[in-house]
Image 1 (tube, rainbow, N blue to C red):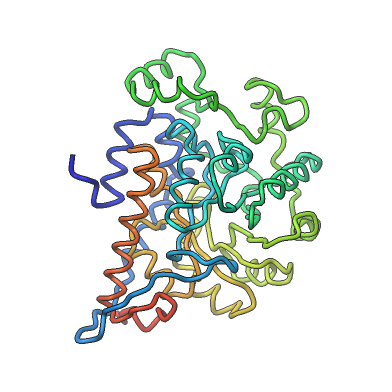
Image 2: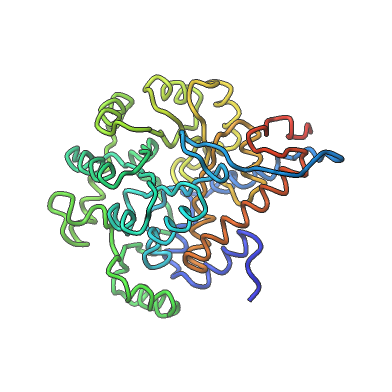
Length: 379
Protein backbone atom coordinates (compact mmCIF):
# COMPACT_ATOMS: atom_id res chain seq x y z
CA UNK A 1 0.00 0.00 0.00
CA UNK A 2 1.25 3.49 -0.84
CA UNK A 3 2.17 5.42 2.30
CA UNK A 4 -0.42 8.07 3.23
CA UNK A 5 0.56 11.50 1.88
CA UNK A 6 -1.77 13.66 3.96
CA UNK A 7 -3.29 13.78 7.43
CA UNK A 8 -6.69 13.40 5.73
CA UNK A 9 -5.61 10.03 4.32
CA UNK A 10 -4.52 8.87 7.78
CA UNK A 11 -7.92 9.96 9.10
CA UNK A 12 -9.76 7.84 6.55
CA UNK A 13 -7.63 4.82 7.40
CA UNK A 14 -8.13 5.33 11.15
CA UNK A 15 -11.89 5.51 10.67
CA UNK A 16 -11.77 2.05 9.09
CA UNK A 17 -9.62 0.54 11.85
CA UNK A 18 -10.82 2.11 15.13
CA UNK A 19 -14.19 1.24 16.72
CA UNK A 20 -16.78 3.94 16.06
CA UNK A 21 -17.13 5.12 19.66
CA UNK A 22 -13.40 5.80 20.01
CA UNK A 23 -12.87 7.29 16.57
CA UNK A 24 -15.78 9.67 17.12
CA UNK A 25 -14.49 10.55 20.59
CA UNK A 26 -11.30 11.84 18.99
CA UNK A 27 -12.96 13.36 15.95
CA UNK A 28 -15.92 15.20 17.49
CA UNK A 29 -16.58 18.67 18.86
CA UNK A 30 -19.22 19.95 21.25
CA UNK A 31 -22.82 20.85 20.42
CA UNK A 32 -23.04 21.94 16.73
CA UNK A 33 -19.26 21.60 16.24
CA UNK A 34 -19.07 25.14 14.84
CA UNK A 35 -15.84 25.92 16.71
CA UNK A 36 -14.30 22.58 15.73
CA UNK A 37 -15.09 23.38 12.08
CA UNK A 38 -13.83 26.98 12.40
CA UNK A 39 -10.49 25.80 13.77
CA UNK A 40 -9.71 24.15 10.43
CA UNK A 41 -11.54 26.58 8.16
CA UNK A 42 -9.79 29.68 9.49
CA UNK A 43 -6.36 28.21 8.73
CA UNK A 44 -7.46 27.78 5.11
CA UNK A 45 -8.33 31.49 4.86
CA UNK A 46 -4.74 32.51 5.57
CA UNK A 47 -2.65 32.86 2.41
CA UNK A 48 1.12 32.73 2.11
CA UNK A 49 3.45 34.96 0.07
CA UNK A 50 5.28 33.04 -2.63
CA UNK A 51 8.87 34.27 -3.06
CA UNK A 52 11.30 33.32 -5.84
CA UNK A 53 14.98 33.51 -6.75
CA UNK A 54 16.14 33.33 -3.14
CA UNK A 55 18.65 30.91 -1.64
CA UNK A 56 16.65 27.93 -0.33
CA UNK A 57 19.59 25.72 0.68
CA UNK A 58 20.64 24.58 4.16
CA UNK A 59 17.19 24.89 5.73
CA UNK A 60 16.52 24.33 9.43
CA UNK A 61 13.30 23.68 11.33
CA UNK A 62 15.04 23.36 14.69
CA UNK A 63 13.94 25.73 17.41
CA UNK A 64 13.11 25.77 21.14
CA UNK A 65 9.89 25.28 23.09
CA UNK A 66 9.96 26.16 26.79
CA UNK A 67 13.74 25.97 26.85
CA UNK A 68 13.87 22.59 25.12
CA UNK A 69 15.46 22.08 21.70
CA UNK A 70 12.96 20.56 19.26
CA UNK A 71 13.45 19.32 15.70
CA UNK A 72 10.46 21.41 14.57
CA UNK A 73 8.00 23.68 16.43
CA UNK A 74 5.51 20.89 17.08
CA UNK A 75 4.53 18.92 20.18
CA UNK A 76 2.06 16.07 20.58
CA UNK A 77 -0.90 17.48 22.50
CA UNK A 78 -2.39 15.78 25.56
CA UNK A 79 -5.35 13.67 24.45
CA UNK A 80 -7.56 11.52 26.64
CA UNK A 81 -8.16 7.85 25.85
CA UNK A 82 -5.22 7.74 23.43
CA UNK A 83 -4.72 4.09 24.34
CA UNK A 84 -8.18 3.34 22.96
CA UNK A 85 -7.20 4.46 19.46
CA UNK A 86 -4.57 1.72 19.50
CA UNK A 87 -3.38 -0.63 22.23
CA UNK A 88 -0.69 1.00 24.40
CA UNK A 89 -1.25 4.15 22.36
CA UNK A 90 0.38 6.67 24.70
CA UNK A 91 3.51 4.55 24.95
CA UNK A 92 3.75 4.19 21.17
CA UNK A 93 3.14 7.89 20.53
CA UNK A 94 5.69 8.92 23.16
CA UNK A 95 8.34 6.73 21.55
CA UNK A 96 7.56 8.13 18.09
CA UNK A 97 7.79 11.71 19.39
CA UNK A 98 11.06 11.00 21.19
CA UNK A 99 12.62 9.50 18.05
CA UNK A 100 11.42 12.53 16.08
CA UNK A 101 12.91 14.99 18.56
CA UNK A 102 9.68 16.68 19.67
CA UNK A 103 7.81 16.75 23.00
CA UNK A 104 5.07 14.29 23.90
CA UNK A 105 2.44 15.43 26.42
CA UNK A 106 0.66 12.77 28.47
CA UNK A 107 -2.92 13.47 29.54
CA UNK A 108 -4.16 12.94 33.09
CA UNK A 109 -7.00 10.92 31.47
CA UNK A 110 -4.67 8.62 29.58
CA UNK A 111 -4.98 4.86 29.31
CA UNK A 112 -1.27 4.21 29.86
CA UNK A 113 0.02 5.66 33.13
CA UNK A 114 2.82 8.12 33.76
CA UNK A 115 4.96 5.19 34.84
CA UNK A 116 4.07 3.18 31.72
CA UNK A 117 5.27 5.98 29.44
CA UNK A 118 8.41 6.56 31.51
CA UNK A 119 9.26 2.86 31.18
CA UNK A 120 9.54 3.06 27.36
CA UNK A 121 11.16 6.48 26.92
CA UNK A 122 14.68 7.71 27.53
CA UNK A 123 14.10 11.47 27.41
CA UNK A 124 11.72 13.52 29.59
CA UNK A 125 8.17 13.96 28.36
CA UNK A 126 5.57 16.54 29.44
CA UNK A 127 2.56 15.90 31.66
CA UNK A 128 -0.86 17.55 31.41
CA UNK A 129 -2.71 18.16 34.66
CA UNK A 130 -6.45 18.32 35.27
CA UNK A 131 -7.18 19.86 38.66
CA UNK A 132 -9.65 17.75 40.64
CA UNK A 133 -11.51 18.53 43.86
CA UNK A 134 -9.33 15.91 45.59
CA UNK A 135 -6.22 18.04 46.02
CA UNK A 136 -4.27 15.15 47.53
CA UNK A 137 -4.76 13.26 44.27
CA UNK A 138 -3.59 16.32 42.31
CA UNK A 139 -0.45 16.64 44.43
CA UNK A 140 0.17 12.91 44.00
CA UNK A 141 -0.08 13.31 40.21
CA UNK A 142 2.44 16.16 40.32
CA UNK A 143 4.80 14.10 42.47
CA UNK A 144 4.49 11.13 40.13
CA UNK A 145 5.28 13.39 37.16
CA UNK A 146 8.35 14.68 38.98
CA UNK A 147 9.44 11.13 39.85
CA UNK A 148 9.13 10.25 36.15
CA UNK A 149 11.37 13.25 35.38
CA UNK A 150 8.73 15.03 33.28
CA UNK A 151 10.29 18.29 32.08
CA UNK A 152 7.17 20.50 31.86
CA UNK A 153 3.69 20.57 33.40
CA UNK A 154 0.76 21.58 31.20
CA UNK A 155 -2.13 22.90 33.29
CA UNK A 156 -5.44 22.68 31.42
CA UNK A 157 -7.56 25.70 32.37
CA UNK A 158 -10.62 25.25 30.17
CA UNK A 159 -12.14 22.04 31.52
CA UNK A 160 -13.61 22.99 34.88
CA UNK A 161 -16.87 21.59 33.55
CA UNK A 162 -17.30 19.28 30.55
CA UNK A 163 -18.75 20.53 27.29
CA UNK A 164 -21.45 18.27 25.86
CA UNK A 165 -20.34 16.12 22.96
CA UNK A 166 -23.35 14.49 21.36
CA UNK A 167 -21.50 11.57 19.77
CA UNK A 168 -20.06 10.44 23.11
CA UNK A 169 -23.53 10.39 24.65
CA UNK A 170 -25.04 8.53 21.71
CA UNK A 171 -22.19 6.01 21.68
CA UNK A 172 -22.30 5.40 25.44
CA UNK A 173 -18.53 5.92 25.56
CA UNK A 174 -16.58 4.05 28.22
CA UNK A 175 -13.05 2.73 28.54
CA UNK A 176 -12.99 -0.22 28.21
CA UNK A 177 -16.27 -0.61 26.29
CA UNK A 178 -19.24 -1.95 28.21
CA UNK A 179 -20.29 -5.41 27.08
CA UNK A 180 -23.51 -4.37 25.37
CA UNK A 181 -24.54 -5.50 21.85
CA UNK A 182 -23.78 -2.13 20.22
CA UNK A 183 -20.23 -2.03 21.59
CA UNK A 184 -19.58 -5.70 20.95
CA UNK A 185 -20.59 -5.20 17.31
CA UNK A 186 -18.30 -2.17 16.91
CA UNK A 187 -15.36 -4.08 18.35
CA UNK A 188 -16.10 -7.20 16.30
CA UNK A 189 -16.01 -5.12 13.12
CA UNK A 190 -12.44 -4.04 13.96
CA UNK A 191 -10.65 -7.39 14.49
CA UNK A 192 -7.12 -6.00 14.27
CA UNK A 193 -7.89 -3.42 16.96
CA UNK A 194 -9.56 -6.11 19.05
CA UNK A 195 -6.60 -8.51 18.87
CA UNK A 196 -4.15 -5.75 19.84
CA UNK A 197 -6.32 -4.77 22.82
CA UNK A 198 -6.50 -8.39 23.97
CA UNK A 199 -2.70 -8.47 24.13
CA UNK A 200 -2.41 -5.53 26.55
CA UNK A 201 -3.47 -5.10 30.16
CA UNK A 202 -3.92 -1.34 29.68
CA UNK A 203 -7.60 -0.73 28.96
CA UNK A 204 -8.73 1.89 31.48
CA UNK A 205 -7.47 5.15 33.02
CA UNK A 206 -4.00 4.23 34.25
CA UNK A 207 -3.32 7.47 36.12
CA UNK A 208 -6.52 7.22 38.15
CA UNK A 209 -7.49 3.65 39.02
CA UNK A 210 -5.51 2.53 42.06
CA UNK A 211 -4.35 6.09 42.75
CA UNK A 212 -7.49 8.12 43.45
CA UNK A 213 -9.35 7.47 46.71
CA UNK A 214 -11.86 4.62 46.50
CA UNK A 215 -11.37 4.19 42.74
CA UNK A 216 -10.56 0.54 42.21
CA UNK A 217 -12.80 -0.38 39.29
CA UNK A 218 -14.49 0.98 36.19
CA UNK A 219 -17.78 1.38 38.07
CA UNK A 220 -16.25 3.53 40.81
CA UNK A 221 -14.21 5.48 38.25
CA UNK A 222 -17.31 6.70 36.38
CA UNK A 223 -18.82 8.32 39.46
CA UNK A 224 -15.49 9.76 40.60
CA UNK A 225 -14.77 11.40 37.23
CA UNK A 226 -18.24 12.95 37.07
CA UNK A 227 -17.81 14.49 40.51
CA UNK A 228 -14.15 15.45 40.53
CA UNK A 229 -13.63 18.15 37.87
CA UNK A 230 -13.49 21.31 39.97
CA UNK A 231 -15.74 24.19 38.84
CA UNK A 232 -14.15 26.44 41.50
CA UNK A 233 -10.70 26.31 39.89
CA UNK A 234 -9.41 29.89 39.56
CA UNK A 235 -6.29 31.95 38.91
CA UNK A 236 -5.53 31.83 42.63
CA UNK A 237 -4.91 28.07 42.33
CA UNK A 238 -2.08 28.43 39.83
CA UNK A 239 0.33 29.56 42.53
CA UNK A 240 0.16 26.42 44.64
CA UNK A 241 0.36 24.24 41.54
CA UNK A 242 3.46 26.12 40.40
CA UNK A 243 4.97 25.86 43.88
CA UNK A 244 4.39 22.11 44.16
CA UNK A 245 5.64 21.49 40.62
CA UNK A 246 8.76 23.66 40.75
CA UNK A 247 9.53 23.40 37.01
CA UNK A 248 8.39 24.90 33.70
CA UNK A 249 4.62 25.50 33.72
CA UNK A 250 2.43 25.88 30.62
CA UNK A 251 -1.21 27.01 30.88
CA UNK A 252 -3.44 25.49 28.19
CA UNK A 253 -6.82 26.85 27.15
CA UNK A 254 -6.22 30.59 26.76
CA UNK A 255 -8.53 32.15 24.16
CA UNK A 256 -8.96 35.71 25.43
CA UNK A 257 -6.56 38.65 25.65
CA UNK A 258 -7.47 39.40 29.28
CA UNK A 259 -6.90 35.76 30.24
CA UNK A 260 -3.53 35.85 28.49
CA UNK A 261 -2.53 38.89 30.55
CA UNK A 262 -3.70 37.11 33.71
CA UNK A 263 -1.56 34.11 32.79
CA UNK A 264 1.50 36.37 32.52
CA UNK A 265 0.88 37.54 36.09
CA UNK A 266 0.98 33.95 37.41
CA UNK A 267 4.62 33.55 36.40
CA UNK A 268 3.85 30.68 34.04
CA UNK A 269 6.46 30.00 31.39
CA UNK A 270 4.11 29.60 28.41
CA UNK A 271 0.48 29.59 27.35
CA UNK A 272 -1.32 27.55 24.72
CA UNK A 273 -3.94 29.47 22.75
CA UNK A 274 -6.64 26.83 22.59
CA UNK A 275 -10.38 26.17 22.61
CA UNK A 276 -9.85 22.50 23.54
CA UNK A 277 -10.13 21.44 19.91
CA UNK A 278 -13.68 22.79 19.68
CA UNK A 279 -14.75 20.37 22.43
CA UNK A 280 -15.79 22.89 25.10
CA UNK A 281 -17.50 26.23 24.30
CA UNK A 282 -19.18 25.82 20.93
CA UNK A 283 -19.43 29.18 19.18
CA UNK A 284 -16.07 30.38 20.50
CA UNK A 285 -13.57 31.81 17.99
CA UNK A 286 -10.97 29.60 16.37
CA UNK A 287 -7.58 29.37 18.02
CA UNK A 288 -5.71 30.74 15.01
CA UNK A 289 -7.98 33.80 14.78
CA UNK A 290 -7.12 34.74 18.38
CA UNK A 291 -3.40 33.99 18.17
CA UNK A 292 -2.20 37.34 16.70
CA UNK A 293 -4.27 39.35 19.18
CA UNK A 294 -2.89 37.44 22.13
CA UNK A 295 0.69 37.62 20.83
CA UNK A 296 0.34 41.39 20.41
CA UNK A 297 -1.09 41.73 23.92
CA UNK A 298 1.59 39.80 25.83
CA UNK A 299 4.63 40.54 23.66
CA UNK A 300 7.69 38.74 24.97
CA UNK A 301 6.41 38.48 28.54
CA UNK A 302 5.42 34.84 28.05
CA UNK A 303 5.98 32.18 25.39
CA UNK A 304 2.89 31.66 23.23
CA UNK A 305 1.94 28.32 21.66
CA UNK A 306 -1.25 27.32 19.83
CA UNK A 307 -3.36 24.25 19.15
CA UNK A 308 -6.64 23.47 17.36
CA UNK A 309 -7.23 22.90 13.66
CA UNK A 310 -3.66 22.11 12.62
CA UNK A 311 -3.80 19.50 9.86
CA UNK A 312 -0.66 20.21 7.84
CA UNK A 313 2.83 21.62 7.89
CA UNK A 314 1.45 24.73 6.20
CA UNK A 315 -0.81 25.26 9.21
CA UNK A 316 2.24 25.04 11.48
CA UNK A 317 4.04 27.58 9.29
CA UNK A 318 1.07 29.98 9.42
CA UNK A 319 0.89 29.70 13.21
CA UNK A 320 4.61 30.42 13.58
CA UNK A 321 4.31 33.37 11.20
CA UNK A 322 1.53 34.79 13.39
CA UNK A 323 3.70 34.61 16.49
CA UNK A 324 3.48 31.10 17.94
CA UNK A 325 6.74 29.74 19.31
CA UNK A 326 5.32 26.25 19.11
CA UNK A 327 2.26 24.30 17.99
CA UNK A 328 0.45 21.29 19.44
CA UNK A 329 -1.20 18.60 17.35
CA UNK A 330 -3.79 16.20 18.75
CA UNK A 331 -6.08 14.73 16.10
CA UNK A 332 -3.35 14.39 13.43
CA UNK A 333 -1.26 12.07 15.57
CA UNK A 334 -4.37 10.23 16.82
CA UNK A 335 -5.36 9.54 13.21
CA UNK A 336 -1.89 8.18 12.56
CA UNK A 337 -1.98 6.08 15.71
CA UNK A 338 -5.39 4.61 14.90
CA UNK A 339 -4.39 3.96 11.31
CA UNK A 340 -0.97 2.40 11.75
CA UNK A 341 0.14 2.41 15.39
CA UNK A 342 3.56 3.89 16.16
CA UNK A 343 4.42 3.87 12.45
CA UNK A 344 1.36 6.00 11.80
CA UNK A 345 2.36 8.61 14.39
CA UNK A 346 5.76 8.81 12.75
CA UNK A 347 4.10 9.11 9.35
CA UNK A 348 1.91 11.98 10.58
CA UNK A 349 5.01 13.80 11.82
CA UNK A 350 6.84 13.14 8.53
CA UNK A 351 3.92 14.60 6.58
CA UNK A 352 3.87 17.73 8.72
CA UNK A 353 7.65 18.16 8.64
CA UNK A 354 7.82 17.79 4.86
CA UNK A 355 5.00 20.28 4.25
CA UNK A 356 6.49 22.72 6.75
CA UNK A 357 9.96 22.53 5.23
CA UNK A 358 8.89 22.90 1.59
CA UNK A 359 6.36 25.65 2.31
CA UNK A 360 8.89 27.61 4.34
CA UNK A 361 11.36 27.43 1.46
CA UNK A 362 8.77 28.53 -1.11
CA UNK A 363 8.04 31.53 1.10
CA UNK A 364 11.71 32.49 0.84
CA UNK A 365 12.84 31.42 4.31
CA UNK A 366 15.58 29.01 5.32
CA UNK A 367 15.30 29.04 9.13
CA UNK A 368 12.05 28.56 11.04
CA UNK A 369 13.31 31.04 13.65
CA UNK A 370 13.27 33.81 11.03
CA UNK A 371 9.64 33.21 9.99
CA UNK A 372 7.33 36.10 10.83
CA UNK A 373 4.23 37.88 9.53
CA UNK A 374 6.17 38.97 6.46
CA UNK A 375 5.30 35.63 4.82
CA UNK A 376 1.53 36.17 5.21
CA UNK A 377 -0.11 37.53 2.05
CA UNK A 378 -2.19 40.69 2.31
CA UNK A 379 -5.69 40.06 0.93
